[in-house]
Structures are given as structure tokens and as C-alpha cells.
Amino acid sequence: MEHQSNKAEWAKRWKVGQTGWDLGGGHPLMPTLLRRLKVEAHQSTGRVLVPGCGLAHDAAYLAKVGYAVHGFDIVEQAIEQAEEAYGAIKNLTLSTADAFQLPAMDPFDIVFDRAMLCALPKDLRVAYIKSMQDQLNPGGFFAGILFAKVNLRPDQGPPFALSESAVGDLFRGGFRLVTWETFPNHEEPKVVEEESLVIWQKK
Ligand SMILES: C[S@@+](CC[C@H](N)C(=O)[O-])C[C@H]1O[C@@H](n2cnc3c(N)ncnc32)[C@H](O)[C@@H]1O
Image 1 (cartoon, rainbow, N blue to C red):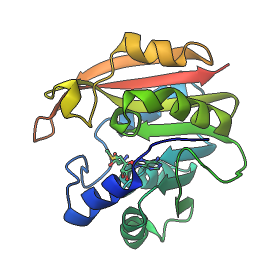
Image 2: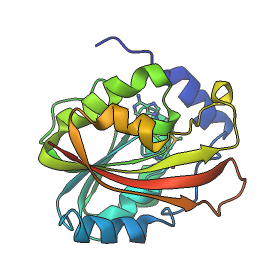
Image 3: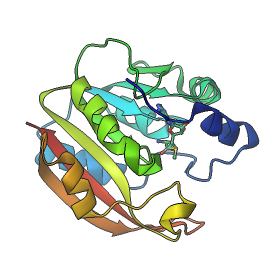
């Protein structure tokens, strides 16, 4: 498939340390996400794919609570650094890969996305969601922490804000909505004002 996901731009951001999205640890909403996965999706175990995992803090969090997690990123440097920090975790596999050209893998129960869909330009969103959908078992879940409100104009992104209706249009055909909750973001700097914790189930 043709795509214009710009590996060189991402590699440059990693090289110069322009990684303001990195929280230095698991996202503060992860405990809430775990509760939602357990109560609303009945999915407290299983195989999880983490696209664009960066330094893999959330992937490591999910592996430590018992999921079998595969995190990948298009930039080698990100995966090398993630391996240094989390390579010893038993349930965690990390690899360099492109979300639009994934190798054959066994299907997953959950895709977990934080700041990957919101980092992609609008014209790549449909192809990205299709690619993730293809990795899921029927009835599997796309769980995400999306940026609901950012202090940037759309032409200044990434990141790009995604409203419930915009995301709904992207997912409606292949998924059903399980949960959508929006929270204020307390992290600094305040590029991202609000985040949405979302779970969609593959039809
Ligand atoms: C905004 S960062 C988020 C990183 C991580 N999820 C986090 O929350 O810290 C987006 C990540 O996606 C990676 N990325 C961009 N395009 C990609 C692609 N086509 N396939 C895999 N990873 C990609 C970038 O290298 C970057 O690490």
C-alpha cells in the first residue's frame, strides 16, 4: 500500500530530542483504562498491540499487569531506548515496524493507541485504522487515549485534536463504540488540554 508516513521526520524528532509527548512513565489514565477494559470489555488478559509505542512506557505498564504486549515504532532509536528501559519485562516484545506495512503476526485482542492516531495527518487516518483493524480478532478492541483539545491550530500539528464526531466517522463502519470519556490533562506543557479515553470494539 502507498502511504506517506514520514519516517525521516519522526527519526529527526527522536534524534534532536523533540519528544514533548513523552511522559517519562505510564500515562496517568492507564489505571482507568484497565478498569474500563475489565468491566466494559471483559478483557483483562490477552494479546495487545501498541503502535507507535515510543519509549514504551504504556506498553510496559500493560505487560506488567499481565497482558502479552507487542510494541512497535517506526524509528529504531525509539525502540533501542525502549529496549534499554523495558527489555527485561517478560511479556513485552518490542520491534521496529511501520504501522502501514506490518509483517504477518498472530491476531491481537486489543490495539492500544496513545498519541499515534493523533500524530497522523488526516489523509492517513482511514488507512491506519484499517491496518489496526486487520490486526484484531473479531470482537477485539481498539483502546486509545486521544487528544480531544490541543492548543494548536490544525496546520501547526502534530498533534491533531480529534473530536468524538470526527473519530466516530472513522470507526463507525468497522467498530461499535464501547466507551468515550473526556478528561482534563494535567501534564505540562499544556499543548494538550483535554484527552479522551476511548474503546471501540471490532464488529
Ligand atoms: C506522538 S509519538 C507517541 C509515542 C508514544 N505512544 C507515547 O505515548 O509516548 C508518535 C510515535 O509514533 C511513531 N510513528 C510515527 N509514524 C509511525 C508509523 N507509520 N509506524 C509506527 N510508528 C510510527 C513515532 O516515531 C513516535 O514515536
